[in-house]
Length: 286
Length: 159
Image 1 (spheres, chains in turn green, purple):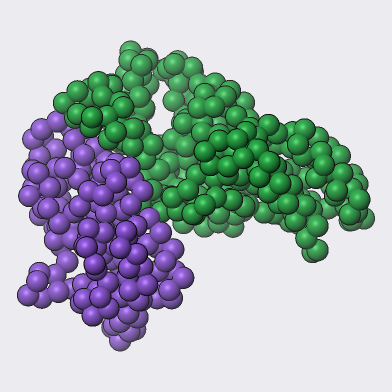
Image 2 (image 1 turned 45 degrees about the vertical axis):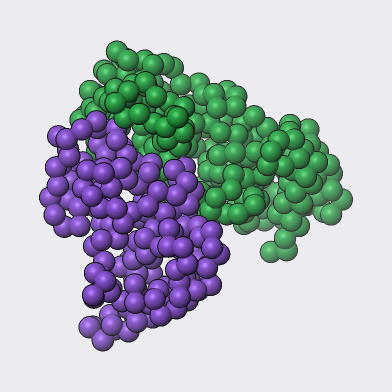
Protein backbone atom coordinates (compact mmCIF):
# COMPACT_ATOMS: atom_id res chain seq x y z
CA UNK A 1 0.00 0.00 0.00
CA UNK A 2 1.19 3.51 -0.84
CA UNK A 3 0.33 6.97 0.34
CA UNK A 4 -2.96 8.12 -1.18
CA UNK A 5 -2.99 11.91 -1.56
CA UNK A 6 -6.76 11.94 -2.06
CA UNK A 7 -7.32 10.39 1.37
CA UNK A 8 -5.65 13.31 3.13
CA UNK A 9 -7.25 16.43 4.60
CA UNK A 10 -4.83 19.32 4.48
CA UNK A 11 -5.16 22.39 6.72
CA UNK A 12 -2.91 25.23 5.58
CA UNK A 13 -2.96 28.14 8.05
CA UNK A 14 -1.31 31.40 6.98
CA UNK A 15 -0.69 32.75 10.47
CA UNK A 16 0.26 31.43 13.89
CA UNK A 17 -3.10 32.47 15.33
CA UNK A 18 -4.94 30.62 12.58
CA UNK A 19 -2.78 27.54 13.11
CA UNK A 20 -3.48 27.47 16.86
CA UNK A 21 -7.22 27.97 16.26
CA UNK A 22 -7.31 25.18 13.69
CA UNK A 23 -5.35 22.84 15.94
CA UNK A 24 -7.75 23.48 18.84
CA UNK A 25 -10.61 22.58 16.49
CA UNK A 26 -8.82 19.50 15.05
CA UNK A 27 -6.82 18.08 17.96
CA UNK A 28 -6.20 14.84 16.07
CA UNK A 29 -4.46 16.62 13.19
CA UNK A 30 -0.79 15.84 12.56
CA UNK A 31 1.34 19.01 12.67
CA UNK A 32 3.69 18.90 9.68
CA UNK A 33 6.97 20.84 9.65
CA UNK A 34 9.73 19.49 7.37
CA UNK A 35 7.98 16.13 6.93
CA UNK A 36 11.18 14.07 6.99
CA UNK A 37 9.69 11.64 9.47
CA UNK A 38 5.97 11.69 8.74
CA UNK A 39 6.34 11.40 4.96
CA UNK A 40 8.36 8.18 5.30
CA UNK A 41 5.45 6.53 7.10
CA UNK A 42 2.96 8.09 4.70
CA UNK A 43 4.86 6.83 1.64
CA UNK A 44 4.67 3.33 3.12
CA UNK A 45 0.87 3.66 3.29
CA UNK A 46 0.87 3.83 7.09
CA UNK A 47 -0.75 7.24 7.48
CA UNK A 48 -3.55 7.50 4.95
CA UNK A 49 -6.76 9.29 5.92
CA UNK A 50 -5.02 11.75 8.27
CA UNK A 51 -5.75 15.40 8.76
CA UNK A 52 -2.54 17.38 8.35
CA UNK A 53 -1.83 20.77 9.89
CA UNK A 54 0.79 22.16 7.49
CA UNK A 55 2.95 24.64 9.41
CA UNK A 56 5.15 25.61 6.47
CA UNK A 57 3.57 29.04 5.94
CA UNK A 58 4.12 30.30 9.51
CA UNK A 59 6.85 32.82 8.69
CA UNK A 60 7.44 34.03 12.30
CA UNK A 61 8.43 30.48 13.30
CA UNK A 62 11.16 30.32 10.64
CA UNK A 63 13.42 32.80 12.43
CA UNK A 64 16.48 32.47 14.61
CA UNK A 65 16.63 35.40 17.05
CA UNK A 66 19.96 36.06 18.73
CA UNK A 67 20.45 38.33 21.73
CA UNK A 68 23.53 38.99 23.85
CA UNK A 69 22.59 36.19 26.23
CA UNK A 70 21.17 33.50 24.01
CA UNK A 71 19.22 32.39 21.03
CA UNK A 72 15.63 31.55 20.19
CA UNK A 73 15.23 29.02 17.42
CA UNK A 74 11.79 29.09 15.77
CA UNK A 75 9.96 25.79 15.38
CA UNK A 76 10.43 25.71 11.59
CA UNK A 77 14.17 26.37 11.56
CA UNK A 78 15.94 23.50 9.78
CA UNK A 79 19.03 21.57 10.83
CA UNK A 80 20.82 23.17 7.90
CA UNK A 81 19.96 26.72 8.99
CA UNK A 82 21.21 25.98 12.50
CA UNK A 83 24.55 24.79 11.08
CA UNK A 84 24.95 28.01 9.07
CA UNK A 85 24.05 30.48 11.85
CA UNK A 86 27.17 32.38 13.00
CA UNK A 87 26.05 32.91 16.60
CA UNK A 88 25.06 29.27 17.09
CA UNK A 89 28.29 28.08 15.44
CA UNK A 90 30.31 30.18 17.84
CA UNK A 91 28.47 29.68 21.11
CA UNK A 92 26.62 26.34 20.74
CA UNK A 93 29.00 24.19 18.66
CA UNK A 94 27.70 20.87 20.03
CA UNK A 95 24.28 21.62 18.57
CA UNK A 96 25.89 22.44 15.21
CA UNK A 97 27.81 19.15 15.25
CA UNK A 98 24.65 17.21 16.11
CA UNK A 99 22.68 18.86 13.29
CA UNK A 100 25.47 17.92 10.86
CA UNK A 101 25.02 14.21 11.69
CA UNK A 102 21.28 14.11 10.99
CA UNK A 103 20.83 12.38 7.63
CA UNK A 104 22.37 13.79 4.46
CA UNK A 105 22.11 17.37 3.17
CA UNK A 106 18.62 16.71 1.84
CA UNK A 107 17.26 15.73 5.25
CA UNK A 108 19.12 18.55 7.01
CA UNK A 109 17.59 21.06 4.58
CA UNK A 110 14.02 20.04 5.48
CA UNK A 111 14.03 18.50 8.95
CA UNK A 112 13.48 20.90 11.86
CA UNK A 113 14.72 20.93 15.44
CA UNK A 114 11.15 21.26 16.74
CA UNK A 115 9.93 18.39 14.56
CA UNK A 116 12.75 16.28 15.93
CA UNK A 117 11.64 17.15 19.49
CA UNK A 118 7.96 16.52 18.81
CA UNK A 119 8.78 13.05 17.47
CA UNK A 120 10.63 12.28 20.73
CA UNK A 121 12.65 9.40 19.35
CA UNK A 122 14.94 7.93 22.02
CA UNK A 123 17.69 8.29 19.40
CA UNK A 124 17.20 12.00 18.60
CA UNK A 125 20.71 13.21 17.84
CA UNK A 126 20.18 16.81 18.93
CA UNK A 127 18.75 15.98 22.34
CA UNK A 128 22.03 15.30 24.15
CA UNK A 129 23.47 18.75 23.18
CA UNK A 130 20.14 20.42 24.03
CA UNK A 131 20.21 18.65 27.41
CA UNK A 132 23.69 19.91 28.33
CA UNK A 133 22.82 23.40 27.07
CA UNK A 134 19.71 23.21 29.30
CA UNK A 135 17.41 24.36 26.51
CA UNK A 136 13.82 25.38 27.13
CA UNK A 137 11.02 24.48 24.77
CA UNK A 138 8.31 27.10 24.33
CA UNK A 139 4.83 25.73 23.71
CA UNK A 140 1.84 27.62 22.39
CA UNK A 141 -1.86 26.89 22.31
CA UNK A 142 -4.76 29.13 21.32
CA UNK A 143 -5.09 30.39 24.89
CA UNK A 144 -1.68 30.03 26.49
CA UNK A 145 2.09 29.90 26.27
CA UNK A 146 4.50 28.03 28.54
CA UNK A 147 8.13 26.94 28.53
CA UNK A 148 9.32 23.48 29.60
CA UNK A 149 12.88 22.47 30.41
CA UNK A 150 14.08 20.11 27.67
CA UNK A 151 14.19 17.05 29.92
CA UNK A 152 10.52 17.53 30.90
CA UNK A 153 9.37 17.52 27.27
CA UNK A 154 9.93 13.78 26.89
CA UNK A 155 7.73 11.43 28.86
CA UNK A 156 8.65 8.17 27.11
CA UNK A 157 9.52 6.56 23.79
CA UNK A 158 7.90 8.82 21.16
CA UNK A 159 5.85 10.49 23.91
CA UNK A 160 5.91 14.14 24.93
CA UNK A 161 4.32 16.36 27.56
CA UNK A 162 2.61 18.47 24.86
CA UNK A 163 -1.14 18.90 25.36
CA UNK A 164 -3.46 17.99 22.48
CA UNK A 165 -3.79 21.62 21.39
CA UNK A 166 -0.16 22.67 21.93
CA UNK A 167 2.47 23.29 19.28
CA UNK A 168 6.18 23.89 19.76
CA UNK A 169 6.81 27.57 19.03
CA UNK A 170 10.54 27.79 19.63
CA UNK A 171 13.56 26.41 21.43
CA UNK A 172 15.33 28.86 23.72
CA UNK A 173 18.95 28.41 24.72
CA UNK A 174 21.07 30.66 26.95
CA UNK A 175 24.68 30.86 25.82
CA UNK A 176 26.84 29.04 28.38
CA UNK A 177 30.08 30.58 29.62
CA UNK A 178 33.00 29.19 27.63
CA UNK A 179 33.63 25.61 28.70
CA UNK A 180 37.15 24.25 29.25
CA UNK A 181 36.14 21.09 27.46
CA UNK A 182 33.22 20.09 25.27
CA UNK A 183 32.37 17.07 23.20
CA UNK A 184 29.73 15.66 20.89
CA UNK A 185 29.92 12.09 19.67
CA UNK A 186 27.44 10.03 17.69
CA UNK A 187 28.17 6.34 17.38
CA UNK A 188 26.29 4.68 14.55
CA UNK A 189 26.80 2.50 11.51
CA UNK A 190 26.89 5.14 8.77
CA UNK A 191 26.74 8.85 9.57
CA UNK A 192 24.20 10.00 7.00
CA UNK A 193 21.69 7.19 7.10
CA UNK A 194 22.04 5.41 10.43
CA UNK A 195 20.14 5.98 13.63
CA UNK A 196 22.52 6.15 16.56
CA UNK A 197 23.56 3.36 18.86
CA UNK A 198 24.58 6.01 21.35
CA UNK A 199 24.99 9.80 21.37
CA UNK A 200 27.00 11.76 23.93
CA UNK A 201 27.39 15.46 24.70
CA UNK A 202 29.48 16.98 27.45
CA UNK A 203 30.45 20.37 28.87
CA UNK A 204 33.06 20.86 31.56
CA UNK A 205 34.29 23.88 33.51
CA UNK A 206 37.21 23.94 35.97
CA UNK A 207 37.79 26.18 38.97
CA UNK A 208 41.11 28.02 39.15
CA UNK A 209 42.47 25.33 41.51
CA UNK A 210 41.89 22.60 38.91
CA UNK A 211 38.77 21.16 40.51
CA UNK A 212 35.67 20.46 38.45
CA UNK A 213 33.50 23.53 38.81
CA UNK A 214 30.63 22.04 36.84
CA UNK A 215 30.16 19.14 34.49
CA UNK A 216 27.16 18.34 32.33
CA UNK A 217 27.06 15.06 30.45
CA UNK A 218 24.10 13.65 28.52
CA UNK A 219 23.51 10.42 26.64
CA UNK A 220 20.94 9.63 23.95
CA UNK A 221 19.75 6.17 22.80
CA UNK A 222 20.62 4.89 26.29
CA UNK A 223 17.15 5.09 27.88
CA UNK A 224 13.58 5.74 26.66
CA UNK A 225 14.48 9.46 26.68
CA UNK A 226 17.70 11.48 26.68
CA UNK A 227 19.43 11.38 30.09
CA UNK A 228 21.72 13.71 32.00
CA UNK A 229 24.10 11.64 34.14
CA UNK A 230 22.98 13.11 37.47
CA UNK A 231 25.01 10.79 39.73
CA UNK A 232 28.15 11.10 37.63
CA UNK A 233 27.84 14.88 37.52
CA UNK A 234 27.40 15.23 41.28
CA UNK A 235 30.24 12.80 42.03
CA UNK A 236 32.65 14.94 40.02
CA UNK A 237 31.50 18.43 41.03
CA UNK A 238 34.06 20.14 43.25
CA UNK A 239 36.60 17.33 42.85
CA UNK A 240 39.93 16.97 41.09
CA UNK A 241 39.45 14.53 38.22
CA UNK A 242 42.12 12.03 39.26
CA UNK A 243 42.28 8.77 37.33
CA UNK A 244 40.75 7.01 40.33
CA UNK A 245 37.80 9.39 40.41
CA UNK A 246 37.35 9.10 36.65
CA UNK A 247 37.08 5.30 37.01
CA UNK A 248 34.50 5.75 39.79
CA UNK A 249 32.50 8.03 37.52
CA UNK A 250 32.70 5.55 34.67
CA UNK A 251 31.47 2.76 37.00
CA UNK A 252 28.58 4.96 38.12
CA UNK A 253 27.36 5.67 34.56
CA UNK A 254 25.20 2.56 34.45
CA UNK A 255 23.02 3.80 37.33
CA UNK A 256 21.99 6.88 35.29
CA UNK A 257 20.80 5.05 32.14
CA UNK A 258 18.82 1.96 31.10
CA UNK A 259 19.98 0.85 27.63
CA UNK A 260 18.30 -2.03 25.84
CA UNK A 261 19.08 -4.64 23.20
CA UNK A 262 17.39 -3.70 19.94
CA UNK A 263 17.91 -4.03 16.20
CA UNK A 264 20.64 -1.40 16.19
CA UNK A 265 22.78 -2.54 19.08
CA UNK A 266 22.98 -4.33 22.40
CA UNK A 267 22.80 -3.11 25.98
CA UNK A 268 26.34 -4.34 26.63
CA UNK A 269 27.80 -2.58 23.58
CA UNK A 270 26.00 0.66 24.34
CA UNK A 271 27.24 0.66 27.94
CA UNK A 272 30.81 -0.12 26.92
CA UNK A 273 30.89 2.63 24.27
CA UNK A 274 29.27 5.17 26.59
CA UNK A 275 31.76 4.39 29.36
CA UNK A 276 34.60 4.85 26.88
CA UNK A 277 33.18 8.18 25.69
CA UNK A 278 32.83 9.45 29.27
CA UNK A 279 36.32 8.25 30.20
CA UNK A 280 37.83 9.92 27.12
CA UNK A 281 36.02 13.17 27.88
CA UNK A 282 37.17 13.23 31.50
CA UNK A 283 40.73 12.14 30.77
CA UNK A 284 41.59 14.40 27.82
CA UNK A 285 44.61 16.40 28.82
CA UNK A 286 44.02 20.07 28.24
CA UNK B 1 -4.42 25.33 -7.59
CA UNK B 2 -0.77 25.43 -6.64
CA UNK B 3 1.77 27.61 -8.44
CA UNK B 4 5.48 26.98 -8.41
CA UNK B 5 8.46 27.75 -10.61
CA UNK B 6 10.04 24.67 -12.16
CA UNK B 7 13.25 25.04 -14.16
CA UNK B 8 12.63 28.80 -14.35
CA UNK B 9 9.11 28.42 -15.77
CA UNK B 10 5.91 29.17 -13.86
CA UNK B 11 3.84 26.01 -13.56
CA UNK B 12 0.33 25.41 -12.26
CA UNK B 13 -0.77 22.21 -10.63
CA UNK B 14 -4.39 21.20 -10.11
CA UNK B 15 -4.97 18.10 -8.01
CA UNK B 16 -4.65 16.75 -4.49
CA UNK B 17 -2.44 19.14 -2.51
CA UNK B 18 -0.79 16.29 -0.62
CA UNK B 19 0.59 14.66 -3.77
CA UNK B 20 4.35 14.31 -3.53
CA UNK B 21 6.46 16.87 -5.38
CA UNK B 22 8.21 13.88 -7.00
CA UNK B 23 4.96 12.60 -8.50
CA UNK B 24 3.80 16.06 -9.60
CA UNK B 25 7.11 16.58 -11.43
CA UNK B 26 6.97 13.19 -13.12
CA UNK B 27 3.26 12.72 -13.79
CA UNK B 28 1.78 16.20 -14.07
CA UNK B 29 4.75 18.11 -15.51
CA UNK B 30 6.17 15.11 -17.42
CA UNK B 31 9.67 15.72 -16.08
CA UNK B 32 10.69 12.10 -15.67
CA UNK B 33 14.40 12.79 -15.15
CA UNK B 34 13.82 12.76 -11.39
CA UNK B 35 13.76 9.13 -10.18
CA UNK B 36 12.19 7.40 -7.22
CA UNK B 37 14.56 5.07 -5.41
CA UNK B 38 13.64 4.09 -1.87
CA UNK B 39 10.69 6.40 -1.17
CA UNK B 40 12.03 6.75 2.40
CA UNK B 41 14.35 9.72 2.14
CA UNK B 42 17.46 7.55 2.42
CA UNK B 43 18.80 7.17 -1.13
CA UNK B 44 18.59 10.66 -2.64
CA UNK B 45 17.62 9.46 -6.15
CA UNK B 46 14.68 11.90 -6.14
CA UNK B 47 16.84 14.92 -5.18
CA UNK B 48 15.82 18.25 -6.69
CA UNK B 49 16.94 21.74 -5.70
CA UNK B 50 14.22 23.63 -3.82
CA UNK B 51 14.96 27.34 -3.23
CA UNK B 52 18.69 26.60 -3.47
CA UNK B 53 18.78 23.54 -1.20
CA UNK B 54 18.96 19.90 -2.28
CA UNK B 55 15.87 18.05 -0.98
CA UNK B 56 14.27 14.63 -1.34
CA UNK B 57 11.20 15.26 -3.51
CA UNK B 58 9.63 12.00 -2.25
CA UNK B 59 9.22 13.56 1.20
CA UNK B 60 7.55 16.83 0.18
CA UNK B 61 3.81 17.29 -0.37
CA UNK B 62 3.53 19.64 -3.34
CA UNK B 63 1.58 22.12 -1.21
CA UNK B 64 4.78 22.79 0.73
CA UNK B 65 6.52 23.78 -2.52
CA UNK B 66 3.92 26.43 -3.36
CA UNK B 67 5.61 29.62 -4.55
CA UNK B 68 9.04 27.93 -4.51
CA UNK B 69 11.70 27.60 -7.18
CA UNK B 70 12.40 24.00 -8.14
CA UNK B 71 15.29 22.83 -10.30
CA UNK B 72 15.34 19.30 -11.71
CA UNK B 73 17.97 17.45 -13.72
CA UNK B 74 16.25 18.71 -16.88
CA UNK B 75 17.56 22.20 -15.99
CA UNK B 76 21.15 21.04 -16.64
CA UNK B 77 22.42 20.39 -20.17
CA UNK B 78 20.69 18.68 -23.08
CA UNK B 79 22.29 15.62 -24.67
CA UNK B 80 23.65 17.80 -27.48
CA UNK B 81 25.15 20.24 -24.98
CA UNK B 82 25.95 18.74 -21.59
CA UNK B 83 26.58 20.85 -18.51
CA UNK B 84 30.20 20.82 -17.26
CA UNK B 85 29.21 18.49 -14.40
CA UNK B 86 27.41 16.09 -16.74
CA UNK B 87 30.49 16.11 -19.00
CA UNK B 88 32.66 15.26 -15.97
CA UNK B 89 30.34 12.34 -15.14
CA UNK B 90 30.73 11.09 -18.70
CA UNK B 91 34.51 11.59 -18.76
CA UNK B 92 34.96 9.78 -15.44
CA UNK B 93 32.52 6.95 -16.12
CA UNK B 94 30.50 8.02 -13.08
CA UNK B 95 27.25 6.30 -14.09
CA UNK B 96 26.47 2.61 -14.28
CA UNK B 97 22.75 1.78 -14.10
CA UNK B 98 21.96 5.50 -13.90
CA UNK B 99 19.12 5.50 -11.37
CA UNK B 100 21.11 7.46 -8.80
CA UNK B 101 22.62 9.81 -11.40
CA UNK B 102 19.97 12.60 -11.56
CA UNK B 103 19.98 12.84 -7.76
CA UNK B 104 23.78 12.74 -7.61
CA UNK B 105 23.94 15.51 -10.22
CA UNK B 106 21.46 17.75 -8.43
CA UNK B 107 23.09 17.35 -5.00
CA UNK B 108 26.48 18.03 -6.60
CA UNK B 109 25.12 21.06 -8.47
CA UNK B 110 23.81 22.50 -5.19
CA UNK B 111 27.28 21.95 -3.69
CA UNK B 112 29.06 23.59 -6.66
CA UNK B 113 26.71 26.58 -6.88
CA UNK B 114 27.31 27.25 -3.21
CA UNK B 115 31.03 27.44 -4.03
CA UNK B 116 31.57 24.16 -2.17
CA UNK B 117 35.09 22.84 -1.64
CA UNK B 118 36.73 20.68 -4.31
CA UNK B 119 38.49 18.24 -1.98
CA UNK B 120 37.20 14.64 -2.03
CA UNK B 121 36.36 14.72 1.68
CA UNK B 122 34.02 17.71 1.28
CA UNK B 123 32.45 16.19 -1.82
CA UNK B 124 31.82 12.90 -0.01
CA UNK B 125 30.24 14.83 2.84
CA UNK B 126 28.00 16.77 0.43
CA UNK B 127 26.94 13.54 -1.30
CA UNK B 128 26.35 11.56 1.93
CA UNK B 129 22.60 11.55 1.30
CA UNK B 130 22.91 9.94 -2.15
CA UNK B 131 23.36 6.19 -2.44
CA UNK B 132 24.66 4.30 -5.48
CA UNK B 133 23.94 0.58 -5.54
CA UNK B 134 26.43 -0.09 -8.34
CA UNK B 135 29.03 1.26 -5.86
CA UNK B 136 30.45 3.73 -8.33
CA UNK B 137 31.31 6.21 -5.57
CA UNK B 138 34.99 6.60 -6.52
CA UNK B 139 34.15 7.70 -10.05
CA UNK B 140 31.28 9.92 -8.91
CA UNK B 141 33.47 11.70 -6.35
CA UNK B 142 36.24 12.11 -8.94
CA UNK B 143 33.74 13.63 -11.41
CA UNK B 144 32.43 16.13 -8.88
CA UNK B 145 35.97 17.04 -7.76
CA UNK B 146 36.92 17.71 -11.41
CA UNK B 147 33.84 19.88 -11.90
CA UNK B 148 34.41 21.74 -8.62
CA UNK B 149 38.03 22.50 -9.58
CA UNK B 150 36.93 23.81 -12.96
CA UNK B 151 34.17 25.88 -11.34
CA UNK B 152 36.68 27.39 -8.89
CA UNK B 153 39.05 28.27 -11.73
CA UNK B 154 36.19 29.85 -13.65
CA UNK B 155 35.15 31.88 -10.61
CA UNK B 156 38.68 33.12 -9.90
CA UNK B 157 39.07 34.15 -13.56
CA UNK B 158 35.74 36.00 -13.39
CA UNK B 159 36.95 37.93 -10.36
